[in-house]
Image (cartoon, rainbow, N blue to C red):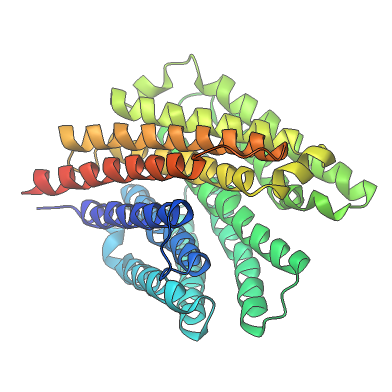
Length: 405
């Protein structure tokens, strides 16, 4: 009999496969003619489904699984409505955005998804308090919930601008970057950190370091949004705050690495070797992301970063695939929340290779584009990288189905 977590995670991995299919189609259209596909509309469906159908859905499942152990009850019974609503709205956006772009149906599904997140925040916050525990991981969870709510400001602003056709470049970019920042640097990152911290917070003498890292990241999260807006020529005082926010997160990441590396923590949490490797790759991707973010405080570099599409796409994929997705897969593997066999393991390996190749190609394309030099057949190479990621996820899902049979 499958556990509730296993049932929902199977759906999550199917959703990740669907995202990769859309990614292949998008890359194919850039490399070869495909006239009946609207690139921009399909991209909206791809991104919204990735955020809601894969990352948010999986995080919610893992949060319910983790908190169930503290409350000694099956939270999936009480929270299954939230999971179903989130899933239905995710599929609604997946279908509606490619057909109409920002229209009544797609915005309605998006709004319902946000409202579902609001109610989920209230209920989950209450359950965190119901445990009567003051664990470091709970601070990360609560911050994640807060940032998820804050991100809705950008989502509603963007929906309003697109529906009323009043968007100019500045308002459009501020809305997009605001939503993206508080999703992947807020909701996604803090929830994943909370899940990781939940595995190590019982280590004696470690709580103080964990709390310091939390405050360094949480206090910096809101001003760090302006790292995406340095092209606005911010006032000097505000620029200083942004610089401090960037260095705060850099210091927090250094403390986190020093606290975890070399202390045999992964043996303490009893993760398999495969899970350790995947989470280590996620940590490396996070370190690269933090380094790039710190460098971007130089205004001239910031203008370059956000002025060239390959660099923006590469940065987003580094965070969403390299950091968040790999962490979620590693956490699932480490906790043995889904049946594992050789097909699943090989699929994960192929998917990881695809991510690394994709990031390398985007970096190469970005560097060349800064010098206004094109790379011959680059779009074909990126299409091949998308196929590699799809192949890995197809094998991964085959492994899940075969194991259950």
